[in-house]
Image (tube, rainbow, N blue to C red; front, top):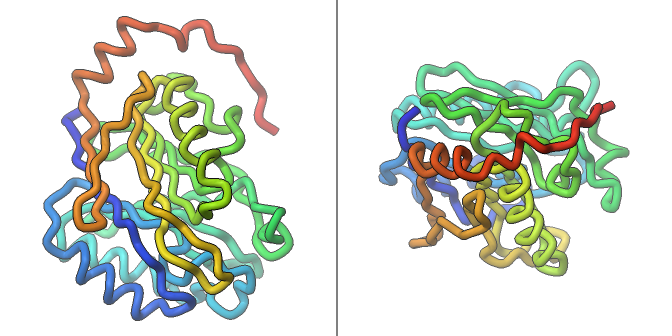
Length: 252
């Protein structure tokens, strides 16, 4: 397991315009040296609750991500609205330069805005292995449910991608920090910025937390940068073996 450089894009998503979002991401990220690019939740369209209008039906987002990963020789991840087998999913893709990929369908759908009426919930927890790092994939509202994210000694870091608005931003930051501390893992939370088609505002609010609760990320030109350090994580876990005393849960 080598140290892992992460670059997330603080992205003002163009409402319901996939091609323009693809173009802007290529322009903003194309020359950034990193091991992994992270994009927000529904980075192709914004958090839009009429998926029949915007959902991928022919792998538009996945194909673009494969092309970008190959061109930059860098892994890339983020979520999009996808139609499959007569269902809509908020799907988090993690794509490698060789074209292989993992996917996670958002489990906790945001009933406050009716996401649960339009989208189908995922049923499986997904952990990807990238350059020796075991990374749990999570999407936005998943952050409020700690049992689902409980570390069973099966991951080293969590990636959260989100559209989390300003009116609830304190909860976002607080819960990211809590997930890092309670799971003794790196937690990288990437939120969108700007104002969406529903007139909700999103401030710059993307962070990486170390298991001790300290912020390890910095922002330069809308790129949120951090590094997962193998030695520091190992030393922290060996010194503070809190996970040995964790409760067990059954996820239904």
